[in-house]
Figure 1: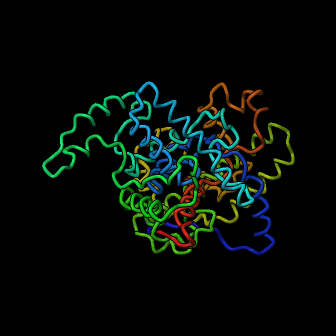
Figure 2 (figure 1 turned 180 degrees about the vertical axis):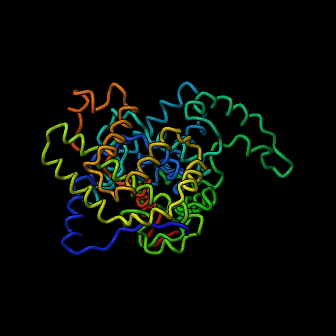
Figure 3 (figure 1 turned 90 degrees about the horizontal axis):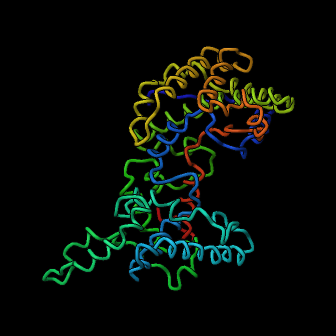
Length: 405
């Protein structure tokens, strides 16, 4: 690998202080205040294809096709299929909640647990793109396009001709879902559970490794151990991953590390404008920690042209202004060895970037917008959906105490 950045070792007192500072913003709002989401998502889509931050549990990758498969079998027409699907999706909530109640604990990731009948964003819309990326959904197009065209799908199914061997002649051209999709458990959706059956885990494992070959996600399915870490690059055996994966992950790590300082400086300035002295001290301490534990000389080995080329190798366009801002921030942070809390040029760069993005809603110029600031916005380090991926891999291995990776 051509470049590395490190967090330097320090004494136990400093380490404890670091953990306290991290705790201040680990659970805080993680909005993209400085407009770097296009790069973040470009990297995340390559590392963990088909995932998103709003996905919760892996089993929804099965629940959604099972629901639509049943509706297709009943030939539910275009003008009713969306409503019928949402009704069945809402029926998932009760058995999933009861699964936790029986175990004496709340089950994480039940979509609709709080909203119940008022649910507005259904699992199918959250997982629709991922189902296509993993090859579970075979037809292209948006969910609404699918709803509108389902009558045409039924007509094509009805017009299929059988071959001499009694097989359908054109099954591949009309099938919405992967032919090896396991059958749902008896009584579904009333028997829905996040616990994977053997056939479920095997199918999803195969889909990931086949459709996402060469990605970190595919490699993790085969190497699901040592997942109890905050970032994917901290996985102890990550050096065993393919070189192409490690190079991309190193780019992601460097970007996460260096841009964290810009987010902290943004919040420091807002804390000052809000006259919140306690917050000001928190962010000063966080910036000091960031500056003091980063090996700045090692940025010389990080090739930015290669980084941006890697980020562009995706479906996400990176605006020119975003690339300029990132390059300016990296150069400035390196030149000052991370000591940027009071640096006028660093403050102005962050301020100008936020104003360019938010315009009249900038918190630097709009008092009402500043009052809505929660005290921490966009301060979490980029982890590229690592939390979602860890949950998915845990779900995949939760079959009779064994891993199916």
